[in-house]
Image (cartoon, rainbow, N blue to C red; front, side):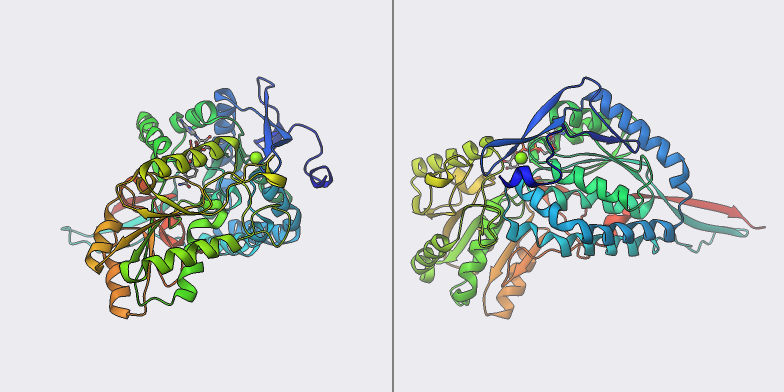
Amino acid sequence: MIERAHPFLDGKPKRMLIGGHWVDALSGETFDSVNPATGKVIAQLAEGEAEDVDRAVAAARTAFEGPWGRFKPFDRQALMLNIADTLERRFDDLCVLETLDMGAPIARTSTYKRWIVQALRFYAGQAVALAGTTPHNSFPGDMFSYTLRAPLGVVGGIIPWNGPLISQLWSVCPTLATGCTLVLKPAEDASLGVLRFAEIMQEAGLPDGVVNIVTGRGSTAGARLAAHPDVDKIAFTGSTATGRRIIEASAGNMKRVAVELGGKSPDIIFADADLERAVPGAGMGCFNNSGQICYAGTRVFVQRPIYDEFVERLAAFSKTIKVGDSLDPATQLGPLVSSRQLSTVTNYFDIARAEGATVASGGERLGGDLAEGFFVPPTVLSGMTNDMRTAREEIFGPVASVIAFDTEEEAIRLGNDTQYGLGGAVWTRDVGTAHRVARDVRAGMMWVNCYGTTESTVQSEGLGMSGYGVKGGQRHVEEYLYSKTVWMNLA
Ligand code: NAI
Ligand code: MG
């Protein structure tokens, strides 16, 4: 049993990090953490509640007002570079833990190393690049005006389970770069990697209270963090429904909010596309991480002359994808994260059939050797229209709805006929088509002849019900600062 062999899974309940100390919940309660590949419990997590969040926020406030506030930009940079170096040495166990915790295959989680190290190094660079401005003014007399940038204060990070080692970076990195402090609440279904990452940060010299981790339920710990009167900003990634609750809860003390929410992204394939690339590209653009990616290309629009051929090839491609043991390096797709997510996705299989879609491949839970885990195959639905529920609602499973279109204008209109606006792609050999579609689809991020590339240096943001707030790039760092204007009478 590999789980037994993992050094972090030592059978002791996992504690929370508050003020530099690993502590139990004040109530003493714990809850189970499950490996979705086996359905088995692999650890107990402390069940943090409102009172634990209060402790963590107080620790974050103390740290913000304490020695951390005297860290110079180059000190914060040095800390972040040290975390990157330490992470590089500790990574091999960490990606196995992430795989056991949330199911993504080792072939995927092992690629996080480059991604995480680069993010830490990019934001470490940002730490020494913060600057105000000196706007000229024409006020009578002799007046000088300038702006200062200062850290907002205590940030609450609330993240989902679909890739916590990556999601946490979107609050950890800008927090450390700017001199804010953080209370991070990982998702119930996948907290272990985040706890281990915090140990690595401590090993690299993270000062007490700068990053605090509270494990627990969204309805208790998460809700308290979102509403807390002493939290200055919430950075949330997750469902649109919960995002709305976060925004409502933030109103109490007017905290700043960034919400990165769901998607139903269009992936538009023209008849002139190179299908050798477009078929696997659109396939993995939807199926990667078992479809549990916010910007997944789940609505695949295909121009009518190649529609039947494309469906056939996509279905054939999906059958070549290796689904199974997440620890086997050859595995491409692991299980869904939880039994709850499994029932959500299999319920959509039923909805799609009832709506009259044709199941070209997949469409049933996997049994046999995989019956104990939460596995579904990549699924291709054809004969779909954009008004079916399967094409409108976020499924968060490996389910591609393939929809026919005739003209470029129609593809853009259908692509934009959604409440979301997160991502999308276009596949064509025509440079004009590529530019027009990339420009006219209303989404925060578009890919041309590829799908799903992301890097911390390159910003992304959503539109509509996909939320708002920047992730990545320099503007992201600015969202952790406030700007103060100073007027000075020089006369
Ligand atoms: P969720 O949005 O409820 O959970 C995300 C995080 O928010 C978790 O840490 C959770 O504990 C916390 N949370 C839940 N309720 C809260 C509240 N009232 N106040 C503060 N924090 C709260 O997502 P869930 O229920 O795990 O997944 C449901 C669906 O959401 C999925 O099927 C998928 O469609 C979508 N989703 C989208 C994600 C994205 O990246 N866009 C990520 C995860 C889920
Ligand atoms: Mg789990």
